[in-house]
Amino acid sequence: MLDYRTRTFLAVCRAGSFTRAAEELHVTQPAVSQHIRQLERHYGHALFAKTARGVRPTAAGDLLYRALDAMDNDERRLRAELDALDGEKDERPPLRLGCTRTIADHVAPRLLADHLSRRPDERVLMRAGNTRELVGLIEGGEIDFALVEGPFDRAALESAPLSREPFAAVAAPGTPRPAGLADLLGHRLVLREPGSGTREILERHLAARDLAVSDFAGVVELASIPAIKACVRAGVGVSFLYRVAVADELAAGTLADVTPPDLPIEHDFALVWQRGSHYGERYRALLRTWRSHETKTQ
Image (cartoon, rainbow, N blue to C red; front, side, top):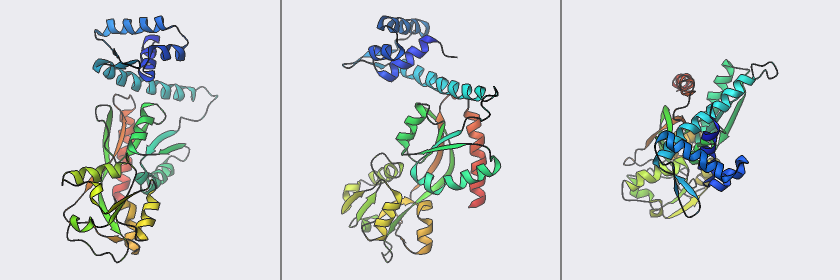
């Protein structure tokens, strides 16, 4: 159980200000300052540095925040589980997960269908967003874990892979397969918005070849995978998506596979959760079940 000093510390970290933290906690600013000084004496490190707009955690403060934030989120879930035992609430807390959009649309439905066939009474709450958005929801305690495809801070999050997924370059039917990536640069590039895992991975691989999305004939940004596929099918340009997201269209011939042989891209779909969470082993066990299901369906 977190005490009043650690809750004050978390409030200051989140607010970036002693004054705003005091207002949120309904205490005086001197009380906030006293709580922080007590923690600094206890740990033997300065926890905050002044900025023009307030304060920011030091390296020690950042480390402490990550640990205490995970404990705070764990405590809230534990309290909900305890409440479910008192007879007044007969439902366990829901499975609260997030998924990046490719996973939400093309992988999560079959995982959750299998999961609910084995646990028909479990409630599921799923949020979709890009990797950055989902990490923020984990840190804020709004979801417990997420299946993501983009890069994430491994110092703050623990992870385990679900599967390794290949990319495919796709174009309108009839587009010839290129001899190399250079043959695709004359097309418009249709891709997700900045911050999406799919885009970040593509940009990283292009940068390794001294290229950028701006080297294509044009760029069209769309936040919807179905919209991207519809535009590509209509001849707007080419796109790079996970093969699992275009498998049906490739099989039906409504999109053409134009993956250049000199740009092989594979990336993990990974389960991520707060580092240090008491529930980490529970998430690993769930992932092992999901991974086994994915292996059987491939």
